Image 1: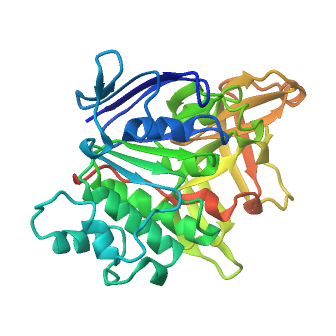
Image 2: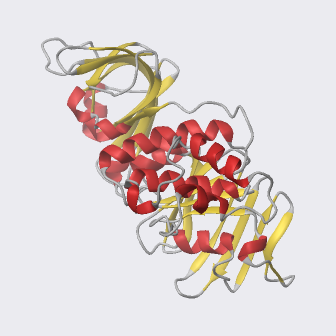
Length: 369
């Protein structure tokens, strides 16, 4: 059920982009406001028709301007979650969900309650949007999108309207929900932290053009690809397991090469997580240092050194089965005499990892929606 998209247009913005999202994959379209992300989403949904375009899902063509094919939105099996959720205010949560179902669907109320339970909304089926929090409204919007039994799920900045704490919980819920989905999911966002925590692959868009496409790890390790988003966004995801919550406000995790101490993480011991570590927050040392305030010193090996256009370089450090990136100067590389294969220690301050830079590790797809 792969989603294939190609679009070219001169207005409302110059657009020339193509990408493919695989079944069960979450693909993030990232870029600044006005870069063309939402325009591409509207093209998929049938809400806008570029001058030249082709959209197909699992071989079924929804749009092909050359062949004269252009299915209307209601004939495209696509689920959409908008920025403002667009719920009907006079309907209950269950009614909003059933409104998206095909006519004649069997047991619509029971199916609505099943979908609401799937997005962690049990017992709230009879509440109207005004009686729900922003996070709960977002969950109803996701359930409504799934009620269409979509071949593709589109998320347009779905977390922008909620506060930080709610956003963190929703990240975990989206990661858990993906175990039940088999269709491609396309997420539009300008938040690189959000994209890195949630996405399998990323497409970076600048001025309507794709400037980089690849796995999330590949894109986030490429400073040139991320120049439109800012060089300081370069980061890596380190897998770890929560071990215990300590009395001093820290949580101890086990990473591949030893303990990792971070500000309290609101997940139970035994939970597998991924920790986003910004490259500019990492210091490298040839020998294990002593007498530092930094709590995290991880042993690793230099896997590669990637020069940038300025004085900085990105050093890839292999840490067990994971990788840490360090953004340091060329001068530091020369002074340390670093080269691939060298043993190093990566130093990370506990307080340099923001609370929303930790998320549950995604699970393999186990069931189909």
